[in-house]
Length: 225
Length: 301
Image (cartoon, rainbow over all chains, first blue to last red; front, top):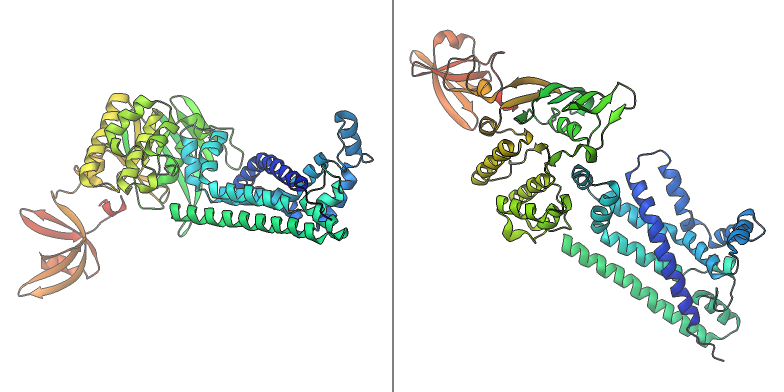
């Protein structure tokens, strides 16, 4: 009995890559806004976005399932207007993992931006540069370690997610059966051998990713310190 | 012409105080802004550049309103720093650490020719590919000055720009600032504590104290044409008065120097150790008199 197949991994990595890109695009403006604002609604937004860290993935998955299903107003709208099915599809788990991994991208970016000295921003404004240009040419290049941390952790976290994907996507081969879910199924099928192979690959991957983050952070600190 | 009638409440070391500026500054001059730290100098400059919002008042530059607002209300008009385009050299340089010296200049303006010219001027051609963390304090200041000049501002605000430089470089940059002022008509406001710099560079001195402009005059009037008759006059503190034969000798600390001055017995009557005095000369003899209200305290520059 050997079900070894690269497909769940390719699916996991594809999901993680697209999630990371989307989250980076959405997180940069929000992190910038949050790092600059003194508004009283800041803690509210921060708490809301950080919810996925503490919520059980099943809770998140359950509500996403309810809201995205074509029996909900939103699901119905998406189905009718864009012909988009979000339950038990790749697009569905993509949205779910974006919600789930949001804080892992947002928080490093925001804390990185908060540490850029205000003087640099003021110098840029005084040179006549807009906030957007300042963000692009002054802020982002100065928070490279934070960007790297956000990107790698988001990617790795998405590869490692299980509960949300299972709730929203189920386990459809080539569509939603990512590596973590494939392992769950293999154990249910008592195919321990393949489960071991899959698991060891994920262990090696996770370790390598974390090593890269720590090594790069160390090197950056040595360079800038 | 700059008309600055601005107010802002500031938090000081001993309670809050009101920064009030009511000055007109003519185009084309070099004005020194002096005063003890925490007296509102930097905030004044920041209000001009748009980096700090005044609480109320009016700021008008060449007939164009840059700020207008009433107390307790949202300002009716408040141009952003970008719209004002004032050149600023910050106290901490504020160079972009990830860009080379050249990169810092080109970020301000894509004018490569001017960047080369300014690099020649500040003598940093050799270091144009170096990043700011690897520069010395004086080099950073020169880059910050060059960067501010890249946008060809009509106004240049300098917050102690020359303090970290050695004498030679300072003199060189002072000459350059004067040249810029003369040839390009750049109006310059410079925070400085150095009286010789004020005298050499500036045509006007504003001294701030607790948010108020307490002196507004020319350096010449401030330093040379003073009410006192002494050619030399130094402020000092009496450390000790002792009797030597028939006269009294006071030991006075002037800065780091201790001097002994003979004082006559009339004066001895109203002087005690710890008094602040002015040591001057009269008919070739040193004289000592009490520091009075009409004396300007130069330690406040």
